[in-house]
Length: 362
Ligand SMILES: Cc1cc2nc3c(=O)[nH]c(=O)nc-3n(C[C@H](O)[C@H](O)[C@H](O)COP(=O)(O)O)c2cc1C
Image 1 (tube, rainbow, N blue to C red):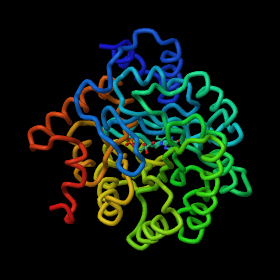
Image 2 (image 1 turned 90 degrees about the vertical axis):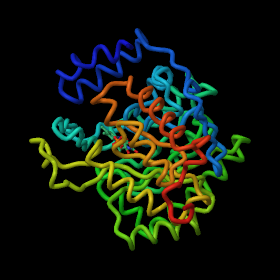
Image 3 (image 1 turned 60 degrees about the horizontal axis):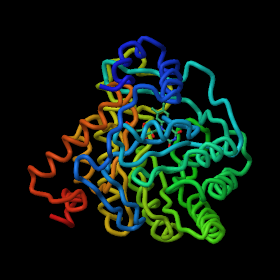
Image 4 (image 1 turned 120 degrees about the vertical axis):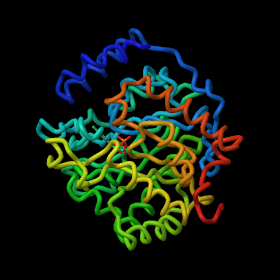
């Protein structure tokens, strides 16, 4: 067992944000970390449109390593890929504390962090100093400053800065904690965002002399009409995208929640998000599977959850909240369990199982 896993009961005695800071500090020291090879479970996957080759399909979602401080340490837990950020052009403190809550009885988390981060200069310095390992791609997730008067310009700035250093980039328009940000998912705003970000990516690609995959990260809180608009716009102005990450946290508060913190404002993640985010993933996949790569995120805490996302149309998955509940040893467990499930159902690869539950593949 790794030191971070052994220390988990102690760390959990701290407030959630102090626990996170202590974890990041510990990871920076790099003591007692395992050295788990990401190809150990024999479940590699190639994301067809982006060409990303992953040694396994289980990734770390954005928000854990906001400043790209500890991706080298996190790679040692067996992740197939990692996503750093969200980074905004300028440093910003985020919302007042407390802003992170454990929903212990529900295996969930509520956060209203508000993109606290050290800004692009710091983020890029970190990625330059410790470039991604060849066997564990590191994505750069970009966002907008709360006080910006042109959110889209912030994404353009972010893309230009991170493009040469990340293995892929993610345009995050789905955080519920920056007022107005989710408005970029509306049809007209999304058309403009994708047109301008597409141009920013083309310019960055020409400068870098290399093509990097780009993903759009969406919210789970979208009705059928809003989702149809996103699908249409992605097919149109977003045809240059490699894929979508589905999803960010939810503003919903399911009636089943039992924790005293359930009424805190912010985005809910962890187990209570699993069903909803998987449903949205499947809806998106029923339109876009095969044309865009889909990464399933939201509520994964087991191999069964990861497998459900893959069957719903994901080629890869990401998790975050369950790590704070179960510790980083979870990454190996999810991979091992997923490998068993694929084998038991007669799939010879992740790609073969991807989308197995979609009517078009039945
Ligand atoms: C404390 C916290 C901070 C987060 N910060 C970000 C962020 O900066 N950018 C982002 O795209 N998603 C962020 N997320 C959302 C996660 O990346 C993920 O989409 C969501 O938590 C659902 O996955 P999970 O249920 O496995 O946690 C954050 C989530 C948590 C819990």
